[in-house]
Length: 132
View (cartoon, rainbow, N blue to C red):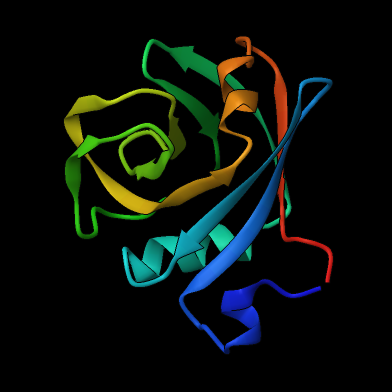
């Protein structure tokens, strides 16, 4: 069943499913208008698996992506998703944070943010397009 945005013909919103091994599932929406080149690069590599690192206000997923800075921001709130170009990391914020480095905004966690609260360093996370 397509989401409301997809049913309405949205070309900006891309919903993805994030599964944390043994801990749960979350829904993340990427929005092309936030950083089109970066979002398209992330969507092209779906599905991907990644080990995570955990920092006080964010969970980071390692990727092989190399994308430059695009519409950078440094202030993020709980549930925001961004890309750190200097490290090739997709970052999910589990608390409000201000970054020392600029990040490309990607989207938001729509549901299941508590799944990221339970993540431990080294957990494997799978990011995939939703089943249509």
